[in-house]
Figure 1: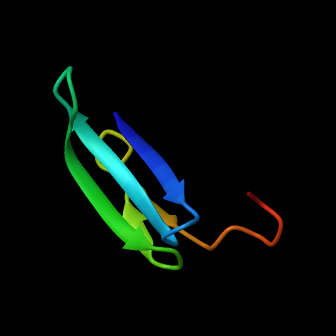
Figure 2: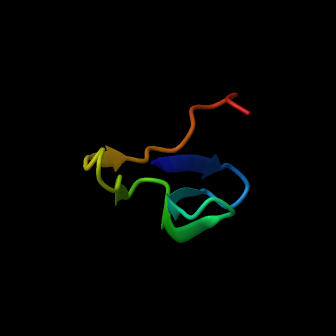
Figure 3: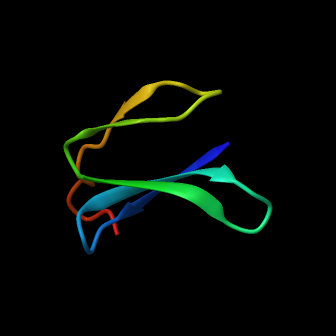
Length: 56
C-alpha cells in the first residue's frame, strides 16, 4: 500500500510506501509536474500537475 501527499508549500508530491507497521520505509519526492510511479501492487504512473488556483 502507498500513500500520496501533495505539499502545496514546497510544490512537491511525496509518495510513501513499504509500511512496516510503524512507519513507511520508502518516501519518493517529486516536484509538481513530474510523473511519479505508484509502487506495486498499484504499479501505475501518476502525473502531478500543480493544484489549481484557489485550491488550498
